[in-house]
Image (cartoon, rainbow, N blue to C red; front, top):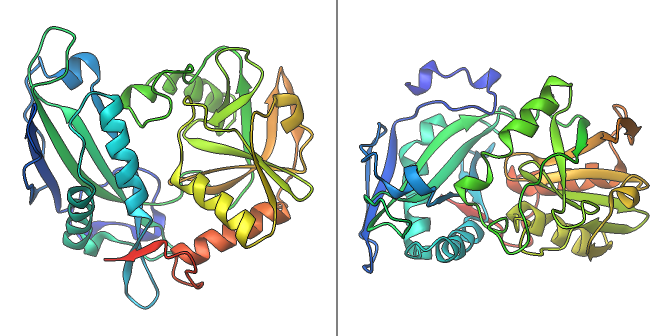
Length: 339
């Protein structure tokens, strides 16, 4: 699709084809080759590709913003590069060098700059993926790998801009067990969540809240976002036990709460019962940014936190974060990378 054919004023969080993508390859036990920008198009893979048979792959998610002054900037891409490298190690894939990752991301954003909406319309979502493209029938690492970066203009992840969302706690499904792959963005982590998420949406909820797989007592994540609870001047978020994704937005929210708002931040286990007694609850992630949670359904009962009125802490964190991302506030932490 050409840029002038995109309805930037009515973007949703969905895929729109753009001009180009980046492709690089790596043989087993070799270094990553320098990739290149190619026209966006389909890939050719063998049915025996390791990613298709055993799910050997990962992805990252970032956003590029067009500021009011016309500049284009990305939010903390180096953190995604480091997380991708760690994820590669966990999934037995050759580690993607940070320099290669960042170079690829910047090149694709620049080449597709005409597709970047204004910050009032949305952002350019950047999707790097790394996967085993080589053939193999046995359960073993691939013999060849591909690194691809593509982009798409997107609107808000949850409908209605900064509006309270309704969530439901699931006792029927788990996201990830301890010592598994919950702490990396493995592609296989997300398919199991489609069923509970779909069931929740049919019942009028935006997403599900997952509990820990061991005791089914402590909150882990909200679908594809990290969970936060506000109690007085304390901000509580589940600690990173290995089953929870170390979100870049999560890390940023913690920094803002401590340094800008003077809050005490607790990274620890938080039970559903404790969370339901919080003053405010919200979730945070690259796609969602900061999303206030208006109500939580637990064991068939809805507990309302806010109904149209956004909590003070949630609202302030959202404004701090988007102010930096949208180029409207001073970037004291050096989080934005101009492209």
